[in-house]
Image 1 (tube, rainbow, N blue to C red):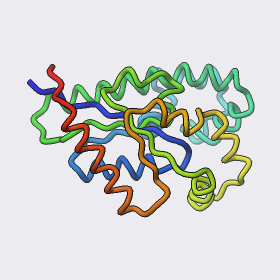
Image 2: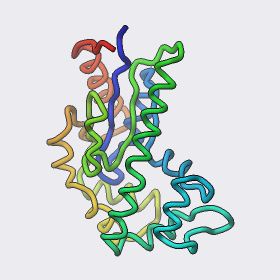
Image 3: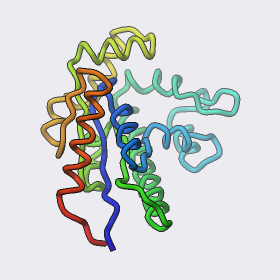
Image 4: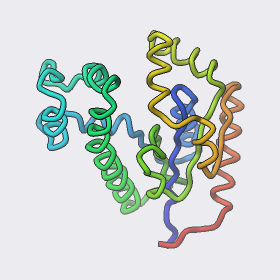
Length: 207
């Protein structure tokens, strides 16, 4: 039986990861996103939620919800605390991705690929869980302009968040495929189509 190929999409902040995943979805891929998984897991009464509250303090809970903005304020200026938080989050995220993959493959489906958007893929050593890796990259100033327009945050915030990730060039070097996303949505779609075709043509993976 042929195995549904697992593809991870990563990249820098506002480099176009989500848009690339949307393009894969448009080509018939099943897509999951690490940020959405974290959002669903960070609930006060879950096992993970309780561990995060124990680590960061009860003040991160607002109206019986874990406030991600409060988490960010606590950890971004405290590298040790950030590392401890990531040691909790990353394994949980990959476990959920695998659960989702198993659920999809055990049901009758017509999906062409299984795609996961994982911003900190290489930082968390998560590439080993996937058959192929794709890096979406863009010029830094283009990323900054996109980030500013979508979040309204200051340049300092963009720089701080970028600094905790690998450089885009390193992500590109370590990936199987690279998307240079400086252009239009149509250009991005064409790049994703080329990569999807290349993956399909690269040989079948047997279960």
